[in-house]
Length: 474
Ligand SMILES: *Cc1c(COP(=O)(O)O)cnc(C)c1O
Image: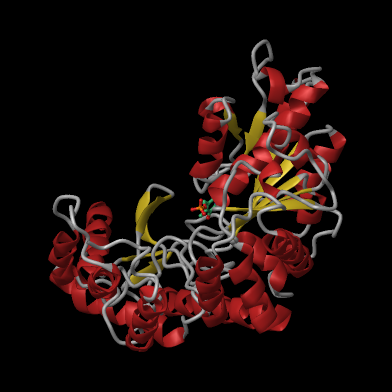
């Protein structure tokens, strides 16, 4: 009968199995398909009823490794351009293994001063990397969605307090709707955060001046005037997923100051514009925001479940998320920080370790180089499609996204949406490159995004070749 206590000696052997598989797996990434759907039936092997007698440590780990390394969507490789998905740098990947090895509960200081202090260290490094003042508060989150939730929860606390209500204790009952104003570049996760916070998803008002959803600053200001002194939250979007476009953050910061509004900036990947002098102007003003969202598992290239939230008033996270009133939990302590008092989670893994490892390994200049390489790849693809007569560039390339569509001569305009939708699916079925479709200004478009450290120009060129090979058959 398998029992972990009886198999203690296999712990290191099980890790050795993973380590042995890791080399060949990582070596295969440059060549293998991003996804080989012929391997998907193998996933069935993971099914069946709950085992009565377990297979034992090594057998179980071998099985998961065998299926996993074949059937995964190999986002870690250099040809996954779908959505905004980073890889894990070598140091971040190993840092994540250390997270698993040490298995720290990083919610409370008492369960891991190591994790808590490392979190404080990496938050400081990240603020430095993005040019944010060191006196901002912050917390690591599982994602940008959770960082939006964290920042907007802080905004809600601030807003309710100005209405004389302690929202932590009493909730939103009796309060008016919290006004939230933004542009059409807003990400769905901001709506989701408002939905979860009880503010209501449809609270969000967008002010747009064109069919790309770009901000109508004057209309947003008029709405602030009409609020007649009622406090509002402004959401600035730094890096939108279709094109990489951004709101004018500094202008929004001016409005927030003038109308005493809270400025929340969603820079899930766009905050990395601050890392290069070539794009830093896009992020200008973000240091004046009240709360800022970014992702670790996108452009920082650490493994999945990594985001961060920064908040200007460093006391407000503790007020928003601390003080649970459980007898066995500590109270807020500035010296010995329990990060579960600063964010929505309780128990949590030490997600500071992979961030520490990658920032220590590559530093500011390594990240600047990687970001600039991605800017170059996106711009290169933009030039290629712009100069070709079978492609149409749909938006200027500003960051790491190239938004375009396939438009071969002779195809009627009315057929282009369905052609590009079929093309998107055919590319995924082919599996050599992965790219997603979207609707942009009413058109079905491709929007490859380059944020994985392994990506270079030849991979973007392969995307063009694959489209020219598949496209004429559709
Ligand atoms: C990806 C993204 C999010 C959501 O991030 P998750 O990490 O997937 O939760 C939010 N905002 C923007 C702009 C994004 O690109």
